Length: 162
Image (spheres, rainbow, N blue to C red):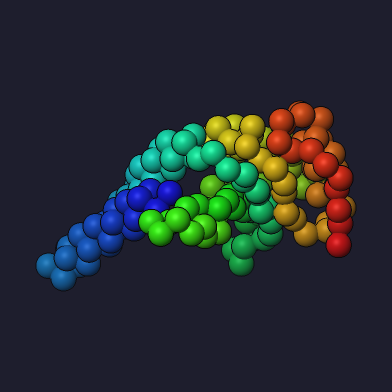
């Protein structure tokens, strides 16, 4: 996992470094070029993350949060949490952002469940998810009930709302 994250940081530094050098030479980077670079970076990191998640053998948990950005866009943030063994044999909790998805419909539990399922299936971790952490919004209860219907093999047990 660390190599995937490090790879992403190296790519980010490379893109940012090139942008800074272009700006120092009097060249300006257009918004479309920056947007394209971000998209390429996201795709490259995502592909490597998927490969590393396939190899991960431990439990995984999702953290989900739907919110509205300052510019008025509704977004669903999906973060994957898992324990990763470091070089010393110790385990560290690692949080990996999987996706930030624009929500284009009402935030119903069914719509959120469908969206979460698409994200989880894209990363191939649906058989490894043991739990989901959300806030206590009523649509999240419906979302969890909808996801339970899919019978992911590790996603079982009693639902708890605090």
